Amino acid sequence: QVRLVESGGGLVHPGGSLRLSCAASGTAFSLYAMGWYRQTPGNQRELLARIHQGGGTIVEDSVKDRFTIFRDNAENTVFLQMNNLKFEDTGVYYCNQGTGDSYFTIPGPNWGQGTQVTVSL
Image 1 (cartoon, rainbow, N blue to C red):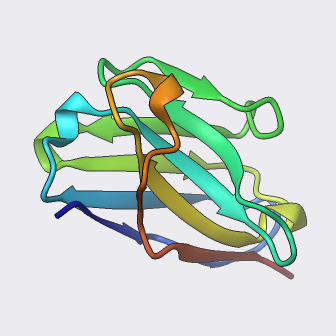
Image 2 (cartoon, rainbow, N blue to C red; image 1 turned 90 degrees about the vertical axis):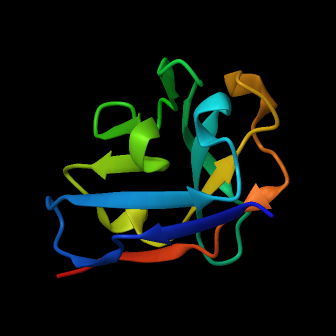
Image 3 (cartoon, rainbow, N blue to C red; image 1 turned 60 degrees about the horizontal axis):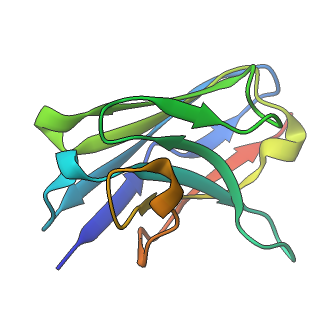
C-alpha cells in the first residue's frame, strides 16, 4: 500500500522560504514521477510542479521563478523548495505519485494528507 506523508509546512512571512518534503513508502519510489499540488479554500487542487522518474522537471508558470522540485531516490522523498513566498501561496500542499515514470501520468490515485502553508505578517 502506497503511503505519502508530507511535512515542512508552517507559518512564514512574505518573502520567506519553506522546503516541503514528501516521504513515500510501500512503493518503488524511484520508478515513478511525482508531483506537488496546492489547494486553497473553495478551489480545486492546483498543479505546481512535477518531476520525472529520471529527474527532469516541469514547474508551472505561476510559481516557476520561485519553486523548485527535486527528489532523493535513496530516501524515497520528493521535495518542494519554495522561495519568496507570497500571501497567495497560502494553502494545503499535497504530493502525488504518478502511475508511471512520465510527468504525464500525474495525477495518480495516491495522495498524501497534505501540509498547511500559511503566509502571513
